[in-house]
Image (cartoon, rainbow, N blue to C red):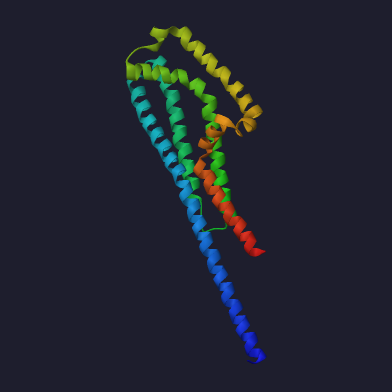
Length: 224
């Protein structure tokens, strides 16, 4: 075989090897992108559930307020819960909008950025839910007692009980805010708080992030 023919055969073989490597890399990327997308589905369903619960709460609070709108001790707590339900709907809709923007065919860093944005949105919402939960306990008790159980909580437990619980809820907001800033990182690394944090951010979100990181690592190896 002449030298030129040998070079030509070598270049042809080299081109075939490069083409095969590109196909293999594309196949690996596609499989891992699909895994990242599938891993996110449980979180997406959870967001849809939150959206549905928010809509249900808006409808129930709307009906309750329409019935008792002239009675301030009922309508005011219902209005507070109504506002929280609306905010829940808006937050869930915002998260679903981020999910729809995730382009798994785009560069990995873009998809990672969208997932980090989604994680931050969920963490922010969870923080506000934690801070407001003690305060919302009183209006929720008032509405449930009247709307579901059919009795007046103000008469059964008295205004003192209502005011003490409201004061406790207000006092807990700065206390919980300080605790999350002071001990949040430490608690999130262990025990029950880590489990709660995983639930808030969505374990499926974490799995999707790991899949994207694997793709990024694989592509870095391919470029070396």
